[in-house]
Each structure stands twice: as structure tokens, then as C-alpha cells.
Length: 154
Ligand code: FES
Image: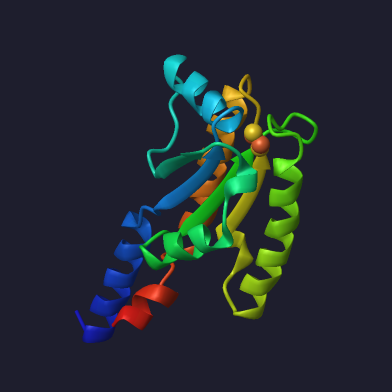
């Protein structure tokens, strides 16, 4: 087998065996409760997500997202209460506005914005959580590993 074929085979194996790391920043009152319901209902979904629970999506600082990528995340998910349901009245609206501005900044810096996902999930939407995690995992897996920060570290 030639060296070129060997490298091609290794690249294919890497893509096929790649399991993305996804950081999910979720609010305590809705999305976390929905994820918890999925767990207590014994629903199965991809194990690629690590959940960070915050009181409200309004608490999510864009620096959290940058730090997640810097520390090896291949994708980031932000999810909270549906519009009008935030337990702190308007935290999710603030988060959505901040999110839109941050996405533009990510786009400007050349980072593929498909690596950032935003969602509303209530405490009763366990199935929506399961579908979201499975879909996000598939999408990030198709994009491959996020190498920008890893390449900077050398
Ligand atoms: S408490 Fe859930 S988004 Fe504010």
C-alpha cells in the first residue's frame, strides 16, 4: 500500500471514529429539567454532550463559549426556557440578543457558526432534548473536529 493510500485510510478512519465533544450551557428551570426528565424516563441519546447548568441563559457570558472551544469542544449548545417562560422574566431574550451579536462575531473571525446552536426546551420536552442532542451530534460529527484552537496551542 502506498503512503498516500495509508494517509487516506487514516483520515477516513479518523472521520469515521471521530466522536464530537459538545458543551451544552442550559438554564436550570427549563432545559436542564427537560434533560433530567429524559434521563429519569430512561430515554437514550448520544453521550457526546456535557451539560453546564446555569440559573438562566441570561447568565451565559460569550466568554464561556470561547472557553469551551479553547478547552476542546467541537460544538456548543445554548438552551433555555421558551420566550415568555423565563423564570427571571427576560433573561432568555437577553441571551438571544447576545447570541445573535456573538454569532456575527464568530462568523467575522471565520469560525463556522454551525458549531453553535441555540434552542428553547421546556421542562416537559424530554423528547425534544433527545432529538436535539442526536441532531447536533450528527451535524458536528459531519463538520469534523474543531481544530482552530488546537492548532494555536501547537
Ligand atoms: S430561567 Fe430559563 S432562560 Fe431564564
